[in-house]
Structures are given as structure tokens and as C-alpha cells.
Image 1: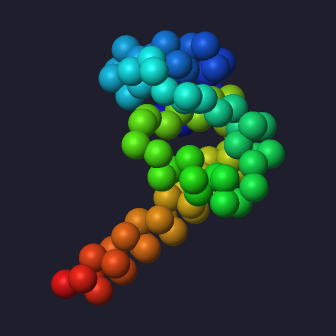
Image 2: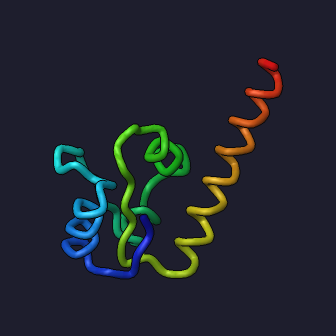
Length: 84
């Protein structure tokens, strides 16, 4: 979930929608927190099974999130094609 809301609001909405269960470790990242992470740490966020919530994001954060997701989907598709 990507939102411009405050962290507390984003977590509450994500719990209500079933995206978060409440037992996740660091379930929500602000745009600034995400931006401060290394490239590998950013990708590692998506490797976790629990929900992902990004709040207080700006357009540049959204672009980076989408870029990472596209890269991960391409890798997945490549692996699935290879496995046939």
C-alpha cells in the first residue's frame, strides 16, 4: 500500500484492509526512511511475506517503488520461463 497519509493512519488503514496483521516488524516505511535505505535493503523489503506499507511518499518515491517492483516481476517471469 502506498499513501501520502501519516504513518499511524497508514498502519491503521492497512490493518483494517487486512494488509497488515499487527505482528509485523517495521511494517511501514515513510518515503524518507525508504529513500535512506541501500538499494539491496529496498529490494529486501519486498522479499518479506508480510504486507508492505509506504506512507508520506512523494512522486519520486513512487517512481522508485514501481521501478523495483517491475524489476522483481521481470526476474520472476524470467525464472518461470526458464523452469518452463
